[in-house]
Length: 121
Length: 87
Image 1 (tube, rainbow over the protein chains, first blue to last red):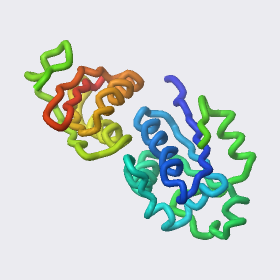
Image 2 (cartoon, rainbow over the protein chains, first blue to last red; image 1 turned 90 degrees about the vertical axis):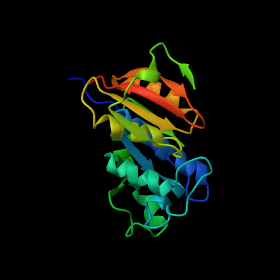
Image 3 (cartoon, rainbow over the protein chains, first blue to last red; image 1 turned 180 degrees about the vertical axis):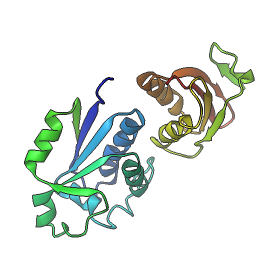
Image 4 (tube, rainbow over the protein chains, first blue to last red; image 1 turned 135 degrees about the vertical axis):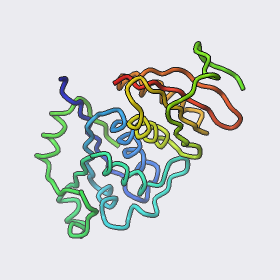
């Protein structure tokens, strides 16, 4: 049986950039529907998306609400990694959404180098 | 209604209709995946979508994951996209 493909998506845009905060989860949804394993890594301001409640009001025109996309992502088995230093410096590391995992650079590198492809936003 | 396929889709009875009208990308694709899980291999699902890109997106998805894109019917205000489960 062929090994499952993996896609890593690095996101750096937070709630203030609704469209660019949303698109990584749009791509992730399409990949998960295509039986591709997906890891999303949140870095910089994007860590706010994993802070409880901050994704709720994000609704970019033309796209589903971000909270809906993040719910689908989790339901379909997507893995959500959060940059530890980024979350700590913003004081949000203790209040992350279910399923979010705090990691550091080494884990990001391991995920990327074991993936078939990676995208950065 | 215009038929845009080599099969006569107008007479094809789908095993499952997935109503994704009003859903934005990637909603119709996610709904198609869920719907496909409810029909047996060889079964056909019909996705309704108001997003004009869905018919292209679903065809690409079907090719990627091993299903058969059968084409679509252009209806009034939405497309009816047909896919046969391949695995």
